[in-house]
Amino acid sequence: MHNTIDTQIGQHMHDLVCKLFPICRSLTGDGVRQTLTILQKEIPELTIHEVASGTPCFDWSIPDEWNITDGYILDPNGVKIVDFRQSNLHVMGYSTPINKKISLEELEKHLHSIQELPEAIPYLTSYYKRDWGFCISHSQRQTLQPGEYQVVIDARLGPGHMSYGEVVLPGISNQEVLISTYVCHPSMANNELSGPVVTSQLVRWLSSLANREYTYRVLFIPETIGSIYYISQHLDHLRKNVIAGFNVTCVGDDRVYSYLPSRNGKTFADRIAQHVLKHHCEEFIHYSFLDRGSDERQYCSPGVDLPMVSIMRSKYHTYPEYHNSMDDLNLVTPEGLSGSYMALVRAILCVEHNATYTSTVLCEPMLGRRNLYPSQGGRVLPEKFRYIKHILAYSDGQHDLLSIAEIIGIPMWELLDIVEQLTSQNLISPGETEHQTAHNQTAV
Image (cartoon, rainbow, N blue to C red; front, side, top):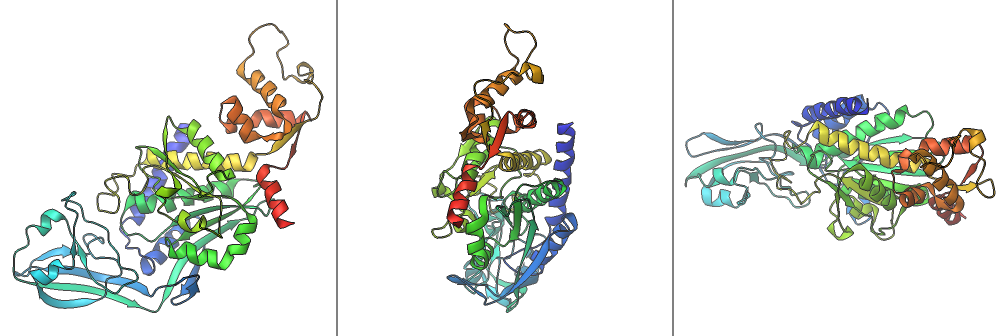
């Protein structure tokens, strides 16, 4: 049953990637708005916000808005050799408008290619310095002949707005789980679209839960400037309330799983991410915070210090298709997307159900009369009964369920039914978890 559901969910997510793939996104502009509007149809709870250019946020300010209609190069014979409408990676992001004839020597100063990947079109931007450029395959670049080339970039760059999306799903507790992904790259499937697509599916699942213990704050933002702006507006609230955070990016291929820790490395979110991946997949790559490169840079920066981690597939900067046209719809698979989705679902289940339990009975309780133990003794106990005894043995008010699962060596989510039985029989009593206590002490 679970495999069928996962396959359906994976295909739905891949279909959404295909729908979003042609849209030209950037830090700002109509492409981001179009993307958020499509996601809003998936998750009606999504609120779209607009922030005016020039708005200050810490050491930064919101940049001018950029929109592009067309871009191309005509060779000396008038043949169109580079066409934005064929691939939106062909024009460097945030290029200033231009329409003129230039020599090949001058054109070369504004061309970008990857010699090591001769058939790939690179992804390049110039957000904060006025410039223009074209990105082409290296093999095509080598065929260019001397002569006069017509270069055209039909773009608008000026005061406007930055758009981002936000979902807040209230829980029983005001303490929050922060989930963040970005919507600012053009047509790249794993590096860009896998994140918002898997995140939107997580929101759909979270919305279906009858009783959420925690509040979930979910962001669809432009990378870097979006997180910096959001933190600048909500820092006190985030520091007070966020108990765990997940930055969702590069979650679409099916090659490998990766874990990037928080700067602290020992937060509740770090414990959960490592526990989940240890049981979710055969092996995973444990990166260092020194290998950071996405919005965890902002969420974990000194003075912000949120417990933000990343559970990924092939990490950014590590796979050959990263930031080029090879990061296409063939790289991202329904299986890769559904695997990442399930890993994050399991992480959230661990957040939701973790607690520190205390046994209500001195010595071992009489399990037989509660139908929690075999009526005949003297033989090897089935695993369930051994797990019952293990949970009771470590329900000392010192070990949370996550640490008990680590001691036993099985996934925490496989203990939830047993814990529910023991709680319903009043054999164990839940108390505060370590992160709850820490937050309460901070609030005092």
